[in-house]
Amino acid sequence: MAFYSYPFESKNTGTPTDPIYDRAITAEDERHFNKLRYKNGIFIESTSNSDLQVVPGNGMSVVVKPGGCHIEGALGYNDNDITLNLDPSNSSLPRIDRVVLRFNTSVDVRSIMVYVKTGTMSSNPQPPELTQQENLYELGLADITIPKGATYISAANIRDTRMIDNLCPQVVPAIPYVAQLGELYDNYQQLIESALDETTAGQLSQRLDVIEDAITTTEIDSMF
Image 1: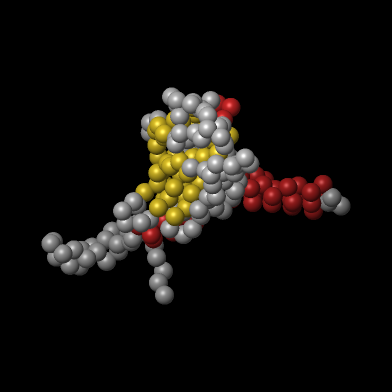
Image 2: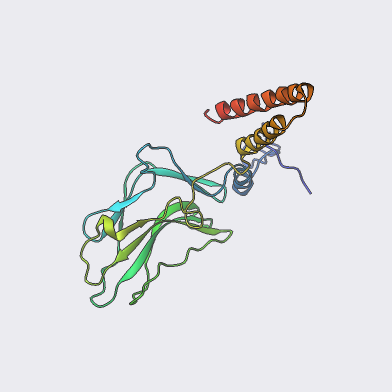
């Protein structure tokens, strides 16, 4: 058993050519710490709500707009438009493709990337299932309906699946401190309203002021 902590200065107990650091942590350790802080999802930063949005490209392509994400402890950021080409449509049957963010720890990948998961042609097409495993985890940004015989993608063909909890939620703190404090505030407020005498009401009011100050402090800290 071990108690892991970071960051602390790591000293080289080996040699300059074969270093061994006594406080080193692995990438897996770092991801574990991040999972204690954040839930999986995308960061919402822009006022236009375009973070990692999927929009039509030219012909049979779509474009993923800039934005950031957190998946299984790993952080990713796209700082420019990414164009994804879709497979040609079928002349007889439609399909639904899914644009995903994919966290992958395999040695030849080790990153978060955007991909197209091509759907199966059918008279009643369904989007491909998301893979959500320990070392390969996907979030669905959008479902793209490919009509039979289509030669281009329009906005009407794109279903935005961002902000849908089981597909691609927003990043939120793993421990919602503000929400917990807000619940305590509501509870004490109810107690004050039901207080039977001025002494009890005064005592509870003082406790309420302390909680309200804590909520304000937490909200200010979360802005930085």
